Length: 469
Image (tube, rainbow, N blue to C red):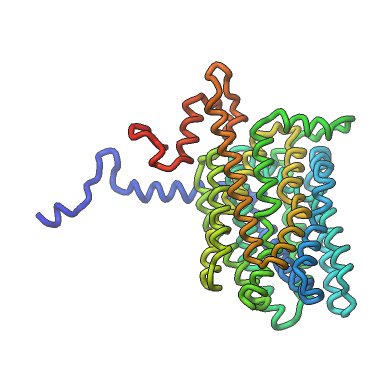
């Protein structure tokens, strides 16, 4: 009798093995885009290349600190790398709409490899100066101006709209998996062989991408018709985004977070060196912890179909909150643990924002929209990098994290306020789907808006009879 009482009952509608089936379905959904052969090749090549990129990120940051010892200089290098994206991002997006994406990627990845090789040679010969780093960072930024929107939109051509959300998230998982592997290798190589080897390995890693893109089956691509050249196309892109609320509001949120929250390339080296009095290995550990958290969080996000404004807002609030916790972590061990959560929250915000923009944009405008995404999220670094670097140097690295966490919270509150205003609109006014950020594009009625807001409210603020999704 005792055994019978303690055994959980299975409802008739839930046959034996249903939990295993759900796990299997979730696992299949998590990696669905990898069933596409072209994307599988691209994913593998990018994983290798991104490990090299993160090795160079660690090496470059430590090189600047070795030369100058200045957080402001470190912020300036980061700013110069993304300044071309800020100034020319819309042009890069327009070129992504006009040009054959495979050919563009082959050219941009080759140029990136060359720039890494040059920096490695300068470090090896001992001739490297700070201005060399400034120039090479700026040149890499020019390449990224075209490369970023092209690669973003090429994902859709590889997998199609059905698997886009999954592919975008797995792409972010891959990037953050590289964040775990790359810095770990970089820390060991710097300790054993010096800084130059990081740049050589990064240059060689681009070969994997070039081979993967060259071997793609063109017949299996979901090619988007290229935009023919005409006057006023940049202005058309700006007008289109301004007239589409979900694109406009998502870009505003991403600009705030991109400017001040995502300055981890500036914050983490300062925290490693001046807060915890560590070495390049300490910086690698912090970066790897954040990357590991992003991998786990990304795999969870990839298995979820829910999207829309409420989840994007919630991701911004959570990201801001955990960065604020990272600012007060008392020990290195605690900081490592908190950065796991920072990584998970960051990938959730990034993947949901990018997916929303690509799915909501019209095909002929997608390159320009993602060009503006580059401006908002990457191009904002020239503004935020020096600010966070100066704050970290003069007020302390922890205050740099405070500024970043607060920015995430502000972005989330702005998004929440947008939902609240939408809720107050009269039912007769109509609610366009794009105004509410439903990734599926389906129309949402007033009750749908209420449901999204209720997801963000604490349970005490919801009526007892309300059904929370």
